[in-house]
Image 1: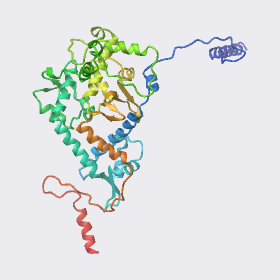
Image 2 (image 1 turned 120 degrees about the vertical axis):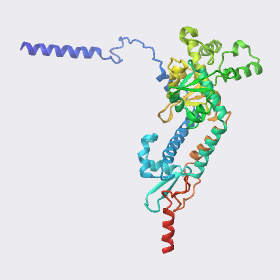
Image 3 (image 1 turned 180 degrees about the vertical axis):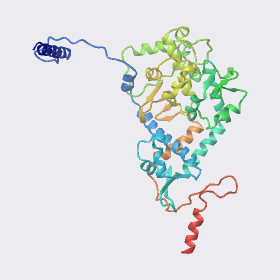
Image 4 (image 1 turned 45 degrees about the vertical axis):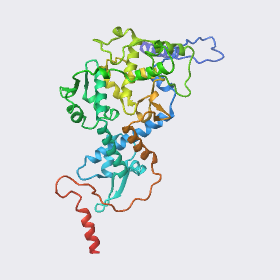
Length: 420
């Protein structure tokens, strides 16, 4: 009995504790209860959710992700030895590799200007290959990269000059290869060819042999000089300033203009300035340290062909650039300089001053070719005609005089026609 009574008492005490821990709702009989005001939490996630959206850049990000999937499929298809065509059954296994969340058949039929779907004349299964228009644009992009080889070398030099140790990991450069306009074999065609400028250390690290003093000027300095000459602003106003372009609908709160004005005048260590150790103390405080990181991100985006890059790939340069900050939070703190798009389950940062209505203001050859690729993606299934039923499967030649794997298909069809 004593044990039963003690258990009842403990159960009653436990229920009382639960009732006391619950929040009392507001009502006419408990209006005397005071609620403690809690300060709203401001973090990178809340800034990301509450940011002012840019519909043009969001739409551009969506189509760029689709183009990225198409180019990944092209790489997988071109690696096949049997020819430039692949069965849809085999392509369905590549969904996870390319990051596709829909059926491969539905995706391929959605873009007839990019993919050609036909029936195999012997096996009678559905096959797919890249259209001639798309293949021509892919070759045109490769030619543009060869023509801009010296410009690519200059970009890699400037990145190495921004590095504190003068070195970069090849893995980080591979992640931003398309953004920098580097060819697939840049290790041999760029780093190996220009051995007077670059040196490979431990096979996976590239080092700059000598600094070029003509390249230690950031791209932002051109804008500052233009503002100084055309708008007659003082050097005090423009020496450390950044171009600010707030999106439409951005709410400017009280005191924001004064803070921004003081931040624009705040001195900082510029990206190409040499220092033995880059820390918060050596940079003059946390604000100047973060402004140095903003300058490095601005210069990095200025060196890319499309003035954009995924945020996750920037994290691979943090140690080399001595940016011991949260990159996403730093970008969200400056909505007038950068814009983050969250479309397609990834974070992509754009340089605001470089874009107007979703288009790059100062285009280049590589950007122009990629816009043509995007035009094919924009078309979708519009302005298309019915594809011919039978087509030749093999349309390319291999080195040597040997017979290709698919050369027997067309003669077999011709023999069947003659026999009939």
